[in-house]
Image (cartoon, rainbow, N blue to C red):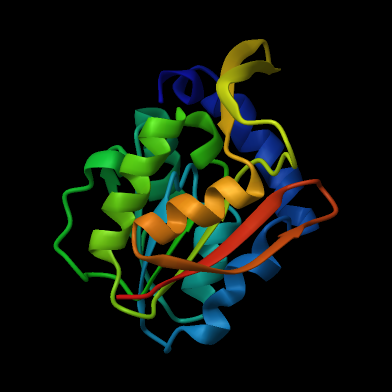
Length: 198
């Protein structure tokens, strides 16, 4: 995503502070439900801190994908033991049922609803049956945010899109997932935990 290339340096320093507070790490260590050494796809891996690093520390084999070249450069420095690929989640180049789990922290809400559906179809294809998929996204109760809204991060404008919580449940079901859990953390990140059903 071009916008993240524009803020890569700022994001790296900002994410160090976030890494210190452990934002997302407890959720990502859904690792407890993945066998040690399992293959985990980190969608929108960014610079790899702190989430990829947490998964590597749990003994998992991680493959990161991101569309921002500058973020991937930092990822390769921060997580030299993990493979990193430049790609969009909607068209991932990996084989069917190649992964034991997937995460997408801070990714889905940058995709329009139709692109989110494509992403779910792609992730579903790549995950083994029963595999967990954890992602962050919006969680409006009544608003169907198909038109999106604009936010600014370090002077760069970003677009954000969301389904309602029930909308996510429905689209997950359509692409072979069951929604297992939803919660909001202290930083107001909405977490959806789904499992590949078949």
